Structures are given as C-alpha cells and as structure tokens.
Image (cartoon, rainbow, N blue to C red; front, side):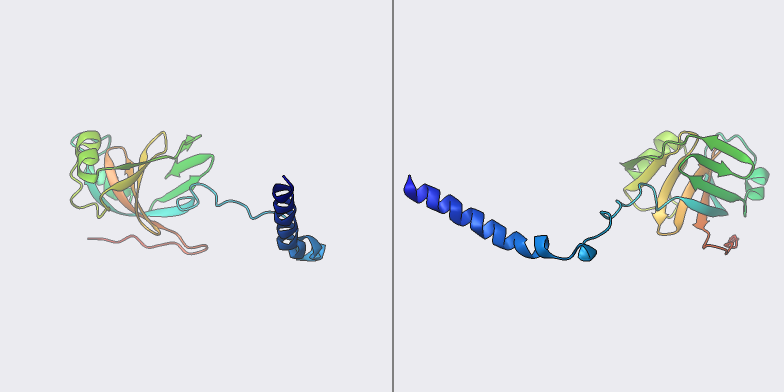
Length: 165
C-alpha cells in the first residue's frame, strides 16, 4: 500500500512540474482566444467566372448558343446563397461527397467526363440547386441547366478572363 501511495505522489509531482512553465507564464503570453477552426467550404466561397463550356447533358435546359453566352458570367458562392448570372439560389447546402468520376457523370449527369479535366475520384458538392466539382485550387466545374462550365476563382479586385478553345 505504501509503495502505491508513494508512486501516485511521484506521478502527481511529475505532472505538476510539467505544467509549471505553462501555469507560471505571464497572461500576455497566453493566446487571447483559441484559433478558429477552418471554415467549411472556404475553398469554394468567393467570386468565380465561367471560363468555357466543357460539355452538356443529353437533355439540357438551354441551347448551345445560350450556354456560350454564359461565358464570362459571374458566379458567387457564399454561405447563404449561390448566384449565377442574375439567378440566385437561397440556402444552398454544399454537401460534399467523393464519387467515381466516369460513373457519376454518366449515370447522374448523362454526359461524358472525358473533357472535364476532373480528378478521379472527384469531390462533388451538392448546392441544392446545382452541383459543383472540385477541379484544382482556384478551379471548379459548375453544372447549370444541363451544361458543365469551367470556372476560375477571381482574385480580389481582379476579374479572370474567359478562355476560348
């Protein structure tokens, strides 16, 4: 019994010695607040520009001409809204999933993924009114009215130019 009691006192003393520098540090050395966790979806929030048409579904809600007219349009992705051109979706969900590229595009989008330039597997983001796909840092694919657009994130104060191919 005596040995067990002595060992617990030794452990307590060792723990206090380890904590002493932290407990004795001046208050000014302590962080004011714990660091904020990285905000979910920070990688997609911001202003984007549609750069080019990558493909379309077998059945689409706009013509090829209307899709080409979307090039250069602004896309705003925010916590409380998704805005493309003059249309706004309120309360988007931005639920993420990782999907098999070829299977998801063929079965869900009725389109070939060959010209999308997306990784396989792909991170798909359900915004409630549309889908987004992570392509690379500063690049996403936006699905809108049956068409898939390459989108480039705008640097603050700079408008990216659409690419024509």
